[in-house]
Length: 78
Image 1 (cartoon, one colour):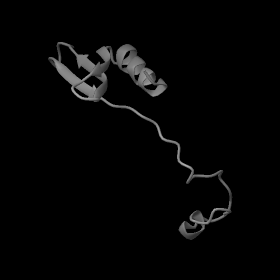
Image 2: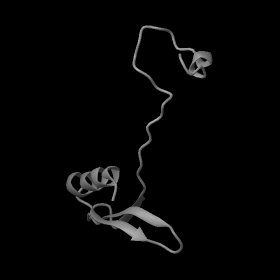
Image 3: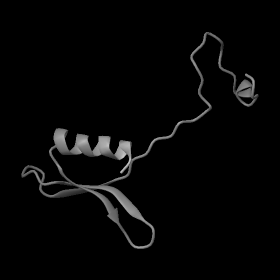
């Protein structure tokens, strides 16, 4: 289980109070990251299929006072 999945599971379990099942293997090579069940009496039984991930893109840089330019973004040294 990845760190992002653990963070989401901890939030859903401890803050929301939902029951969770992580890493459910499915047919083929598919997998559900997290299945959460809200069984509170006020809402009835609700199920949530939760996928989580993180991406770090190189297209963002340190903040500067320089104006943003889409053309400069394509230049490697800018």
